[in-house]
Image 1 (cartoon, rainbow, N blue to C red):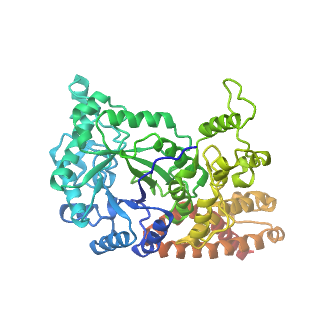
Image 2: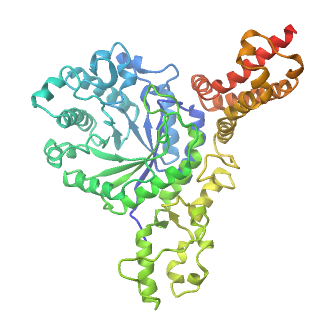
Image 3: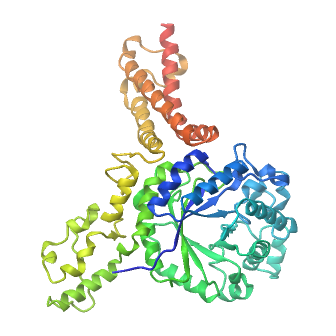
Length: 545
């Protein structure tokens, strides 16, 4: 059984480049995060930060004001949440490089994603961004300087010839820029430690990493969001980084925003499995090395993508994942438990284990994610091993995404729900947590709106036979047959008009109008407009007859 090492700080990532919540909602949210076990926030402001001077162009229309940022920081502090701001400083710079005044700093002229590292003005820009954020955030211990997914690096007019000549490598080019950024942090802001994403470091040799000196400046944050995370490869990666001189490491999981750019509902089982795998990795890392884990909650895949799951929709999953980390000592390693139980059965006088095999734990309801303590093999519960395995009544099973009894009860009480939907998108109970009404409405609209419209327009044979797109285009219909679908169509329209009105109100309580409008246009209007136009055509044609 894995006791596990303390996971350290548990940071909840707030991705503000899409659907930034109003401060009033954050005031409701932060106490819940603390109660669930969060110890900090990874705040990715992007265009929501109130940049000033020549950087003012970066601010979106409804960016937080300086007073609102101070209020957010005050709310975080009063709830015991450490704040770590996150700034992209190399890749994912679309919110900067899309503006004409900064477009000349692109690595590739046509693409606004990455800075040209050969231009001194690029570093000057990043320094100014960091300094403005630091001026607002007093007493910081860390700042995250991004550095992930620097696509098309080396494809620029200045860097490509040098790469072709063999004068430099993409790895050295990347390290040179990130070192310049990190050096500015540690020299201009003593006592603040830079964190950076690790993906661009993974394929750089140990020798190059060690020789670059970057390990003396930054703490890598190793990220992976898949449910079947390869534990052994991550352990090897942590060992590589430590050999290169990185004394501190971070992990990054995901509680939403990692299963599709246009995903609107969060699958808890996917993310739960990811966290359980990370706990296994943590079990192999020295206590002094692992600083903590960031539970990322991406709101857009990049500056130009659509919105994925809204924050209130992902809160039940966040609660499950946080409690999984809090109760890490209840995690179970199947290999170790199977081996351990087989050995203990042999010690207790049971049959010896055949060479090369392991005993399989008998949890009859495991596949159904039942509470394991209630479904253990009765013969086992009365065996000499009962006292040793008694604590397995609360256990997290990574393979099937099961959730243990103790954290599950905490989650249900905290969210005001009676049942968790771990393996499906739907839930019978939507709770009373901040934004639970929006969670309810989004779930209902996502699962029912499109299907109900399709059922009517494509499943009613009176419509497909007597009021097809051809009939609607040429404005005619058999009057007798209208009665076979008119009432159903009008009733369905009235029903969805009421629900969508409630949805818009719920959105606008938490978000700014632009976010509400964007979500409705992206996830509601395509299906709802079909229904609305259908009834409009019906009105127009029947009025003529």
